[in-house]
Length: 132
Image (tube, helix red, strand yellow):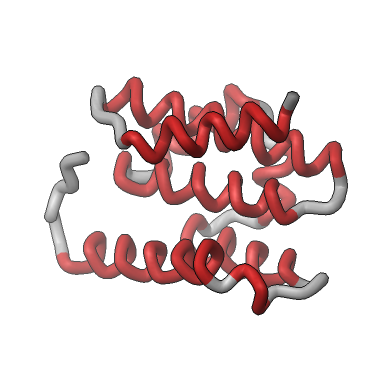
């Protein structure tokens, strides 16, 4: 996947988001029932929108948001954040909403960039198994 190096700020942002996602994946045991607070902070800090926005936004509005307000390099991290949030959610309706949005964005970013990562197919399989 190609990354445009337009400025150090984009690279720094990507590194910070990567650190956060590694924390979610590698240190899952550190989260307790207040893990939604961690996700709230991630949405606010990295995407300047609340978690509620991502839970309630329509698919069309979500695609418009990522087209207009995010760089293409930010879409995949958002999809992964939505996926991990959905996997951690105890509310079934909320879980399905987040996972469907993650699936939408993973497919969208692969289509837009004409690039794919084999791990994304694993993520899509995980999402499909949870949605079934």
